[in-house]
Image (cartoon, rainbow, N blue to C red; front, side, top):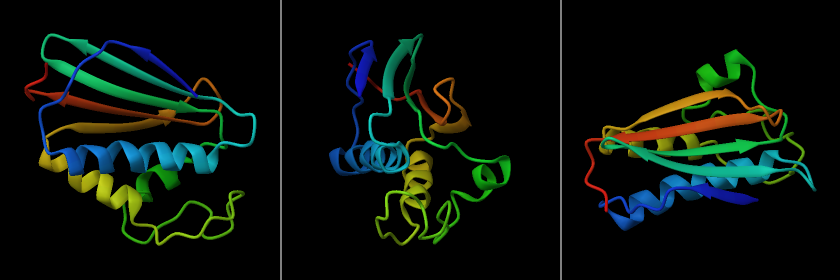
Length: 127
C-alpha cells in the first residue's frame, strides 16, 4: 500500500470521514490478493480535494458498479476470495456520507487491474 499526493485536512465530522475512508480502504484490502497493490492518491486544486484509491484486485463489471451502492449487495455475495463475512452495507454507508458532504464518487477500472474509486469534495473547507 502506498500513499501519494498533497497534504490537506478536510474540516468535517471525524466519525463520518473516518468511516468513509475506512470503508473504502477495507474494500480495497478485501478484494486485493496477497502481494497485490493499493495506491492512495490525494490531490487538491482550486477548492477541489480528492481521494483516489486504486487496487490490483479483480475489479467490477459495469453491472456490479451500478449495484454496489445498494444496501445488502456484495460483489460475489459471500463467495469472494477474502472469505470475510459482511452485510453488504459498506458502500451504502459510503454513498450516504458522500451525500452529507455534497461530494462525488466515481468508480472506474484501475490501471492496476482492479477498481479505481475517486471521491471529490468541492466547496468543503480544507486546510
